[in-house]
Image (cartoon, rainbow, N blue to C red; front, side):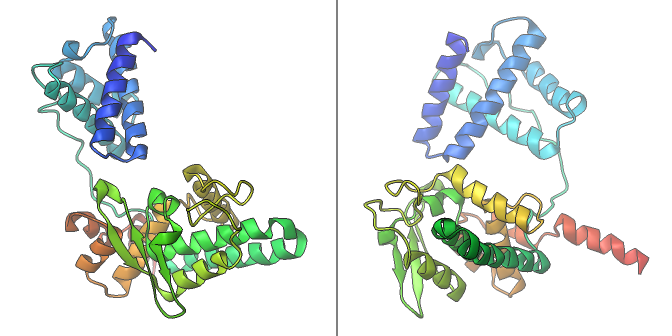
Length: 309
């Protein structure tokens, strides 16, 4: 990577970190900017610099992603958002006098709800978890402790709606748990907001089963790496756990975010109001929460299938 590009990306990364943007978002933004820089240099035959970028470049890049690369609207809009954030920072720091992304409209798209598990898929996942626990205790007793943690963590995510990093950073001191009640404190949610999340019976049961066998360790995190007891679980480790269970249950792309969406959708289906769901999820705007009353792709598939009946 060239010196100028490295300097720009380092400064932009520091800015995003100061704005308390999540590490995952920062990583995605930096990757999107790198791709734009590569396209700019290849298309224009000149070294990238912030003042050299024009509105025409942005129009052409948007067209390139849409027509040549055939990217989805959501992907294009995310990349444009990353580039816009870059130039807002550049203007604030005096590196450019105008923002070339102004007037570059995002791709319009029909709002479709995020992916969540329907009741049949949740049943398949629950069965896969139970089967995994039974087989590991019978055939691989040394692995059972890890499997117990994995099972508890997955069920915990499905019944709390915590984001990946919120679950990963959950401290033992932030959990209040009794036989009939429980709650947890999310210390540093998205945007630096704190919130208290009550625990239902399934979340309490999952936590209690894990805490009953959790190794003695100086690590303050609830979810620890059994093989390295001084460490908390990594985000990638949590993702791998859910991926494995998803494969066992024959689910497509089961992730922590899908678990969060499933929690929210279950609340909607149970008649819980959007204001309460927003508070539980840590949303700052009800507009974010409204996606859970939007038909999902699966809902639309079922709708058109009714034409055959």
